[in-house]
Amino acid sequence: AVRLTVGNSSGGLNPVWYLKDGAPAWPPPPTLDPAVGIGTNPPYYGGDQANRPDSELNYSFNIQRQITASSVFEIDYLATLASDITSNFLAINQVPYRSLPPSLSPFTAAGRTALGSQVGSAAAIAAGFTAPPWTCGAGSSSSCVPFNTLFGTSASVAQALRPFPQYTTINTLDGGGDRIGHSTYHSMLLKFDKRLSSGLTVQASYKFSKLLTDSDSTNAAAGDMYNLRLLKSIAAFDQTHQVKLAWVYELPFGRRKQFLSQGGLVAAIVGGWRVSAIQTYASGLPSNLSSTVSFPIGDFSNRPTITTYDGWRGPVSGDKFDPFKDSWLQPQSFFPTQPISAFGNSTRFNPKFRNAPTISESPSVSRIFSMKERLRLELRVEAFNVLNRVYFAPLGGATTLGNANWGLWRAQANGARTMQLVGTLTW
Image (tube, rainbow, N blue to C red; front, side, top):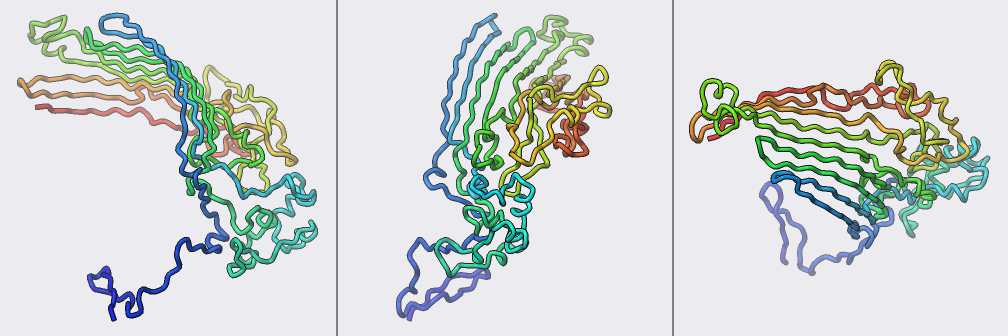
């Protein structure tokens, strides 16, 4: 007899099996257990679709014009059209509400009560619903489990009406994604570059752009399987206008400079100084409303019902927005009463309703001391958000119709002014 052994974590050997009669029998792959994952949200593997890479078409057009010996102006057009984007908004186990009888309609009070009731309860029976008493893995009676035992208090009529009632949701993301996302991006860029001359370096740009997508991230929220077009909207990170400016200016005093180049005490004091800054100005990110009206059919959030995308911003009492006096939104009465007879009609984001713009200035002042030929000390004072601008953001529930925090933009989303002193020794 031959004994096969393997090492264990303590350095010893553990017997595995004897090979007197050959290797033990084992089932050839694939070995499928139809009971795996029942009662949970298992990943769905999309096969070839999961292995498909994202597709992109990129278009660009560029014109450059030299203005001076050290400066260039540029205008660019860039477009990116993307498809097969990894997303997670296929609600393939959503309750098929369109084919339900009137007694189970999610758009009536009685139907909503019946859908949320326990299987076998009086409300379910009164609605004419009787569920199969067993929940089984695919094609295997040996893996059957009583439905109410499997789901407990979650054994609702809505759960039993799913296309695959043995599972809760079906996770398409961990199986490689559903690969049905799309996006379109168009932009115009004006750019100015000035290389170092006369002590000044400048990089400045202005971008005008628009990004539409239904997949802001790979973990995009599931959508109504019967109306996936409602997911297409302006992107969560779309910023229509962006201005960026970075510059460095070496003061023209001291050795090898325009003034006081012969040295001396004054040159030693005022020479070697450099000022710089990074400045950013951009449109606010888009926002939208949410609704407390939900439907017991699972897997996606209901959109609010609206009549217009215009005029959502609330009035300002003074010269500028005061978070403790003003509401960022119109009163809730401006919006229609949210119905329970239909899903909402709003897209994910409203391009005309945005958060506060991004405004930031971060300057720096530095001084270089040449101590020896190869020994230099640089002292630098830096300030971030030097004007201490506040980027107001919504409190929790501020965009939810019916919430007590409605319209309250009182959170601060950016950092307060910060200053630091930096020393660098080079040899």
